Image (cartoon, rainbow, N blue to C red; front, side, top):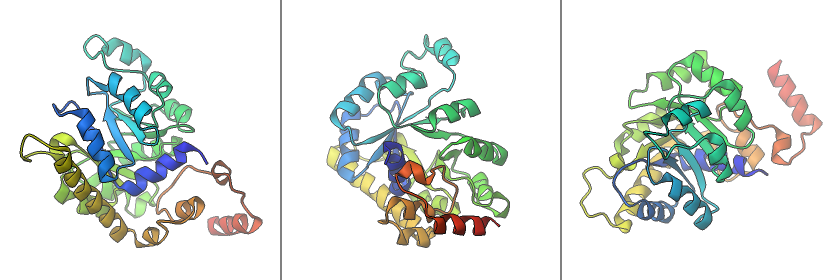
Length: 275
């Protein structure tokens, strides 16, 4: 079973992803707090000027942590043209060479880019419209990033005309109190930067305090996910194929990619369902 499929399930079930930006906090302390809180996945963005040092450090010290990189650009040309002002930027190939597990993009990805990297990395492009969401997922994107706190696009994507096809990730203004309504509206998982997570918390911050705050975010998101998707909640600890079959949205994984065989009965049931 591939690491990428395991990353997909970990991100999905974690329900909340802490996002590292240029926030003035100690990245090492925040990362250790994430691990102590029970995070199996994080997003480290290219907006962080220390990203070039932190990604190799995370891979060396925490090889089991699933690492998404945010604010990525799918065009090598744009990366080269932007390096003078933002020297921390890296191409997708450079990031893949560092062993990251997925790419999140605020500006989306070209269909060819999604198809190139989706077999080995989680692809999460930002979408602004329902057609964009369908096109991205049809090309192989694992999730569609939608910008909150407004939830109109999320609800539209989960409406009758959306057929539950697109699995949304929602970021932007997702405070603790907004998590339940966001997941109830259809978000598969949410992400929040530490500048919001730790807003108004007493300074100086301690690792223990950050850990406590993160646990509250994780518990709130996972409880909201279980409440909103009770059928999926029943399959929480099931084998991979059973869990994937219980998802209420499209996923791109074929049975052979999970190292399992499809029986004639399974195939017949699938065809009957399509007919």
